[in-house]
Image (tube, one colour):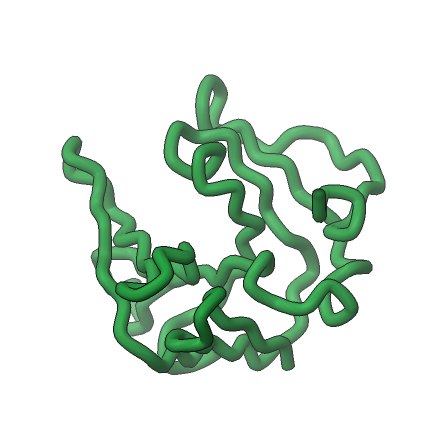
Length: 131
């Protein structure tokens, strides 16, 4: 289990399973947020508590990015549609965790800007991109 919280502590999340990787995405939003995403399903693998506000791209994007209404930290995202099994996919921002809890998780680089595909792995981990 991995836990994280926003800067002020008003929003907390818990990911029940250790992810195989953390995604660093280059899309126009993720590169600005600087998030490292770990995936799961809301109210199944991912539990979030605290008040957040959502942002959805004006082009009708299918992801709601959630941030703390107090400190503005980007904490997680939720897809806007349910999967066939009824679950809602989401992701937590691993940068909201303590480094020791996530440091050895491999990074998956995703080109969300040009090609919409995963890039070759380079053996870097979260600790390599922490700062």
